[in-house]
Amino acid sequence: MADIAVIIVTHNSHEVLPACMTALQQYGGRCRICIVDSGSDDASYLKEWARLPRISLLYLENVGFGRANNAGYQLCADRADYFVFLNPDALITRHTFATARKVIQKNPRVGCVGGRLLAYDFEKHKPLSTIDSTGIFRRWYGRWVDRGQGKEDQGQYDRIEPIPAACAAFLFCRKEMLEQVKFAGGEIFDPDFFLYKEDIELGLRIQKSRWQTLYVPEVKVYHGRGWQQRTDMSRTARLTAAANEILLYKKHPSPYMAWALLKYVLVRFFGI
Image 1 (spheres, rainbow, N blue to C red):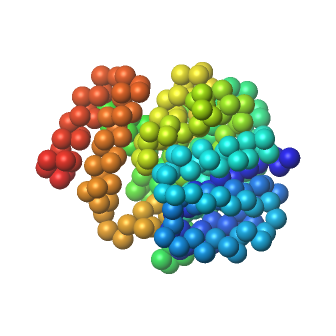
Image 2 (tube, helix red, strand yellow):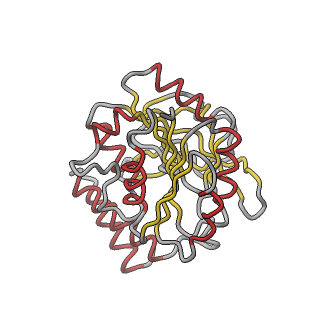
């Protein structure tokens, strides 16, 4: 049995997956990799990976990010002690897995580790010095944000600390925790979330189960967020994210529902 299993959900990810896989081959050790394709227009770009050892491929219709990750987990749930949910546009670095595993092993109540995610430019094929995420936090009025996003990385956010949720581009998880927080049908991510906010929902569920999600700044990952969106986030995507925020507070009741409703109205009727 592999120590670590990595689940990667792809959807027309031919531009970014090679770099992700190269990083895993360099720094991932003997991890098992499960690639779940969620309805790519042409999935032939995945064939080259099917020939390699310790790699499994699963082809689905476009079922969404959460459902595809769930299928990957169910495929290899008995094959590892730790599971990494990794975006195809995320690149691990030399000590990513070793550091995350060491921290989680020393802290018996930590079920999930998130790292310092830094931006990556796939057009120029180079890492950037701006922060992508150091955990997901809720502002006083209810909006969820990736802490530090867009700021120059100057060593801030340098403390290991519990966080409400970690960005799903990289989640290093203890199997024991996943088995405890999963739904009755075996799903890790709530299948009602097609895309957006599923990582926050999981983080809230982890908190309620008395496990912790821990931010570890030494766990460094590069993330090319928005590589498919050459311009700003589309109105459809923003509307989906706003609707999912309402769904989030239906499942985890909170006064912050007022913010979610206001956001939805602003996006739908005013295009803000």
